[in-house]
Image 1 (cartoon, rainbow, N blue to C red):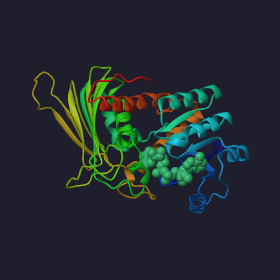
Image 2 (tube, rainbow, N blue to C red):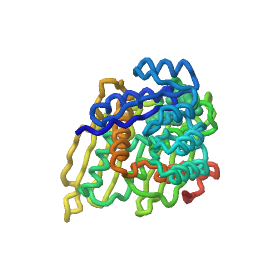
Image 3 (cartoon, rainbow, N blue to C red):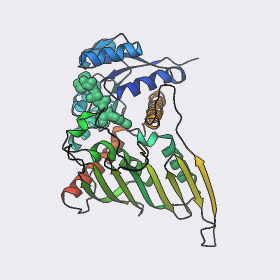
Image 4 (cartoon, rainbow, N blue to C red):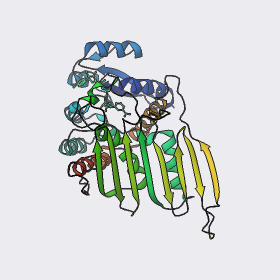
Length: 355
Ligand code: NAD
């Protein structure tokens, strides 16, 4: 028999929350989930989302929502300053939590939020969706299959001049920008593909004079495995072809290499054993993300990853498994962001990430 639908409530009906709501609506059939209530302090945004998704139960106050609706989980899609209070509120009500990235403004807040959910015994997932992008899942599968052997070197690159400030004006205002907002995703993917990081150094620049924070970051990572990675990101990279929001990947390994190139083209090269020559087998595949009915280019890659991570959350809630990007897991990604800022401030000294 079909399982009882899980009842979710969304807190924060801003720009990105509409992707969450579209994905929840699509998962309704396949994963038995229903968004039963919405919350936002902004009445216009609340009304717009309520009518677009036909969700009549609306609240200006999250505490009131939790008291009267008693959902199975809350999906927090507000910006970082509000996350701690909202996560702790959900934990106090014994309600499972998804929280958007950046999970918390400080590592101390993040640790307190993880502890609050652990103490309340409620599942906690950070909506760290980049590693759920279909092309990056394909890269992960190649590594897991072992066909190119053990990774020794990687480059993960996100370079764009897309005007992100239009839909997200707050990005121009913070003292921190690209590492905290975008680099955080690429560093998470680096962990997912190459393992934990023991040391890193970073260099940051601000190119766009109209923003407060850094819009270029270059990070050199040493992994526990001994592998090295370079994570480089920019929102000040005018290129002949705008690649937003693609992450390009190159990985060299003991038995071959792979490249995720522009246009979601994945090349996997296996070295011919015993010859030492680069004349092995090469396969090229299109690993483009699907374009869901509600999605629009060029965002469709990210929109598909939202669907994938939310499906994973529902699977985890039903089976009691810990989500891949649990709060506990995300502490390691946040530690990389903090270490990168510390290194950049100290002009490229190497820093050991502290969880
Ligand atoms: P936004 O400012 O457009 O929306 C946030 C909404 O939350 C606003 O409508 C605001 O009124 C509401 N809000 C804030 N505090 C609240 C509270 N205590 N109670 C109720 N409502 C409250 O922001 P956005 O651009 O949608 O970004 C939201 C989050 O999503 C950010 O943390 C951002 O980093 C993240 N984001 C993630 C991705 C991704 O790919 N994972 C992409 C874009 C944005």
